[in-house]
Amino acid sequence: MKPARLVIMGVAVLAAGLAGYLALNLTTPQVEVTEGPTTVIEKMPTVDVLVARESMPVGARLNADLLEWKGWPEDVLVEGLIRRDQRPEAVAELDGAVVRLPLFAGEPLRPEKIVDSSARVMSSLLPAGKRAIATEISVATSAGGFILPNDRVDVIMVRRNPGVEGFITDVILSNIRVLAIDQRIEENADGSRTAVGTTATLELDPDQAKIIAVAQQMADRLTLSLRSVADAQEADDGGAKYLLSGDDGAGHVKVIRNGAVTNIGPTN
Picture 1 (tube, rainbow, N blue to C red):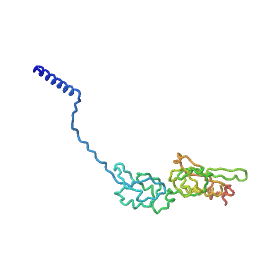
Picture 2 (picture 1 turned 90 degrees about the vertical axis):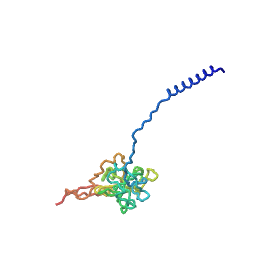
Picture 3 (picture 1 turned 135 degrees about the vertical axis):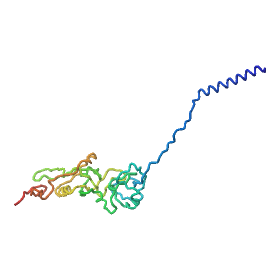
């Protein structure tokens, strides 16, 4: 091959290589690496608080297997939580304590949700000033057996109308909390919602306890009427005051005979 041709071919190869290099530089984006300030992530300070390891129903007894210490952000701590730095022996101290209100897994314990281990279960569930009164029930008088502990009910008294044919029905108590059905103070463990019992224990104030005690003596039947859960915040005070026996403060005495209530005036 002639030298002139070799020179031409060499120039052509160099030109092609230069063109490819220029094309590659023009199409590849230029990346500039700049150094910025280093971000330091600080760990949020925490405090160990006592929490429930698993969900627990009302009436459950606490033990070491059901409790554990968990770190809780210090800036969201509230009064009432059980802290390890304040009560390091809390797990042992609370062994056998009774759950007064439902606890959920991971929920911090608060003193108002539990009571001392020496307390009886039912008395520990009663708020101050309240009384527990039992009344007989059946499927026919308890909304078909669908009334469960912690439901709200009206108590309806059915009695014969003295001297005439027929019956009288009175709502003697309204929006009353059911503490237990027979010996059960919680729903079924499997989540089922039916409870058929023979006795319902109701949460009442002292006057309401007197009302139902009188009603049990004079009624042909006491029926529990299930209320909506939306009524739970309504007041449950009051009741059929005419069933309160004794002196009414004006010198009148109420006498209940054969289902009839009679006021006897003051005597001089």
